[in-house]
View 1 (cartoon, one colour):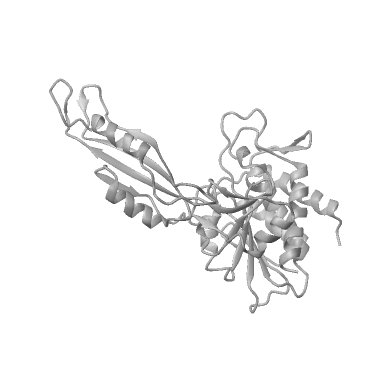
View 2 (view 1 turned 180 degrees about the vertical axis):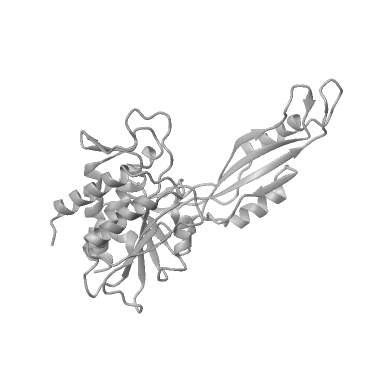
Length: 356
């Protein structure tokens, strides 16, 4: 049996390798190879589907409920603010710098270490399925959603995202709308009392002031924000329409389809079309044994405003992981070495209370 220190060191070394291997969404083939090598090194049989790498515990029993451990190995592209090489793992002052270190490499290697810890144990109350998934950052078709018909049916999940190892018991969903405000096209020199740009003023005010009725204890209100606006091609022509993009963060009191129905009925736009409705809100009851176990370890519960692979799961799911969400997608991204060590320890302590 490896010591806690050995386990943490191996996890950190894997994270360094992942950082130094480019893995933009849908381009994760090389980090998938690194993960395959990790499973081989730990003598754990695994399977791979596109760039998703997954395994089940040694004594998997179909008669038992199944717990999914999941995090992703794809990253966003580095922004222009980096002062350090985003593809070089640099350790300074107990911080490990590099693209994907915080989102969500630290979570992934911590969950892999946890899975390895329980892999050979007999008589667990839950089966374990570990999925290192692809295409989380772009909500792609070949990510975790593509694995749900391949892996065993899941009863509950822990999704590894940076939460400072606090318990995100709910997560907002997302619907993005393309909206249109119409008017009459004309020459700018002539009178026009149906200017689409002027018409959009009241529409924008409506979006700013609109309130959805249902509020959630964990997630608060539905947040709706106009994030893009586009109209006109030349200075002397009044355009026929103004295009808006509307970002709606949905609490667990509404389905995404309900949000679509409400806005298509009530918004003053001439057209309000969703780009998709698959990214639903998610939650886990605070009475669930996973949450109770976390609280007993001194963890606090909260509702997360950010989106993750929880959105494609239909079972109860808990978002939990080392690192800080506010560091995600920032320049000179980093995670503290101590956070990874603590993450592995808390994951193991949590599962000891639930599955052993």
